[in-house]
Length: 102
Image (cartoon, rainbow, N blue to C red; front, side):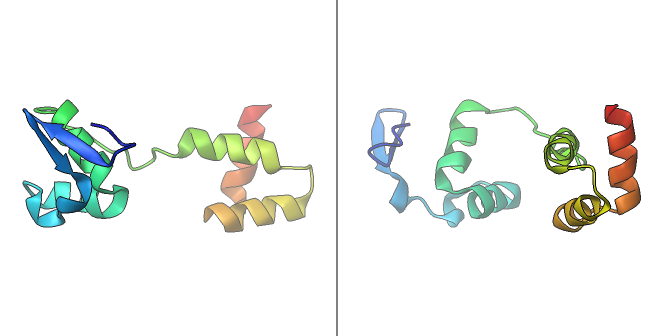
């Protein structure tokens, strides 16, 4: 796949990415990948991850949330409120994470 030229090579054929539509995806899941992540990601998965099942964890952002909490907590209750609101988490959960980071 050549992202700079916006084409993809499938077998011996060079196909422009803008000619690939959601209807070209083999199933509903891949159409959703196309819609959420774009044609480049969808086609890359089809080319390079054939036969693999990918499970997206429901709590896949947990490590990133901890990193964000640790970075933006400034020792004040207002920062806990702001972090909780921005991450759509409870203040109790933020405090729990902060306690586990010590």
